[in-house]
Amino acid sequence: MKTISNKAIWLYCAPEFAVGLFTAMVSNYLIYFYQPSKESGIPTLITQGAIFLGALTLMGLIQVVAHIIDAVTDPLVASWSDKSKNKNGRRIPFMRKYAIPFGLSALLIFCAPQSAPGLVNNLWVAVFMWGYYIFYTLYMIPHNALFPEMIKDQGKLVNAYTLCSMLFVVGSALGYVTPLLVSLMKRAGLETLWAWRATFAIFTLIGVVLLLLPGLTIKETEYVNSVRPSTPLLASLKHAFSNPHFRRVTLGQLFEGTALSFFEACIMYYVTSLMGLPEESSVTILAISIAGSLLLYPFINKWVKKKGKKKPMLLGCAVFTVAEFVMCFAGSIPGNPMVIACIFALFVSFPFAVLNIIPSSMMADVIQYDTIQSGVNQEGVFGAARSFVTKVGTSLAMMIVPSLTIIGAAAGENIGKTGLKLTAVVGGVFCAIAVIVYAGYKEKDVLGVIRAAREKQEQ
Image 1: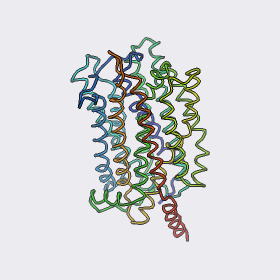
Image 2: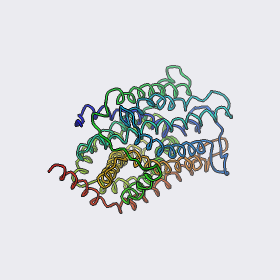
Image 3: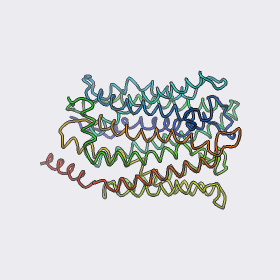
Image 4: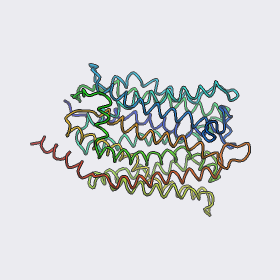
């Protein structure tokens, strides 16, 4: 097998930029777009208010179902990929086939017919939202599974995950510029609704091109000689969850991922409704946090290689917990709101860097540990099992956030400040639990097995 080059790693990481774009679209702006505040100028396109059990909004219900579909399809796709007998490999053929549907579905979520809220618009959003998560799974589960198969060296793998994270963050950064691009397009004469859609169309074009790159440039069979699992799907999943290290890391990622989902879903509301700043200010605020996190990447990369991943993960989660609780008082802290917002952005840059780099790399250690112990490559199933659990957390966040944000809303409005503060409190509690869970992870045992296997191979 060939040793993967740095150029091939860059090409394989390129889709992370696209995923960052699409994640910003769906995580940061979906609720804002379809549950619009009066400040946004976006027309109401779908049914508003609580429609299920007296608390769940339509947007919350659609997202809950979407994440359930996503979570259920993860292990199925992982099993198909792990057991694939395609002559071009187990992963790349999936990525070639589903790159375009993945990108287009992200755009079409935001293209519900411009008419009065009703069944047609509600179904439109639901169908393309669910399609987006299905195609996301069909592309990303194979993509993520191939990484630890191609790169065996721990240092090189950490560098690769750092690069992936950097591209994801830069892609997200471009996504965060959405309010500024929307504003420019409105000045050029586009209506508010079409200014948003035109911006997302540009993102989709960029994203699809990047999603296609690995499938068109990398030959999987040159780098991987896989041992295909023969065990049934349920047995494979049972094997994954029987690994105590996997359970611990996955549970930690469930809680910190849920906390991050709360923050991402509400950031535009925090800026406009709690801090009283215009939409365009979110661009500056997010740019500061992203620039700060990128500047910290080299430091965290070196720290991880020398001291492991557990300590920076604990500190990152602790800092993010504090940040969530501070957000409750964003509208009442004395001083210039923009200055306060910028200071807050610098504060969260450290946990952003940690939570973007370390979780995938930490999970790769656990997967490599299991492969050494079992002798079978089941990266897909492990990735899917982890994804299943963490997406349950995201589903929980997407279910709770729309229901919380309407608490305290004035008559005729969709968003209440009391509800927004509650989202920050709940997000902080989830991240605090993550600190407790990660504290029990036995990283030394995992890395010890990996080191011993490498030393044996070098002899």
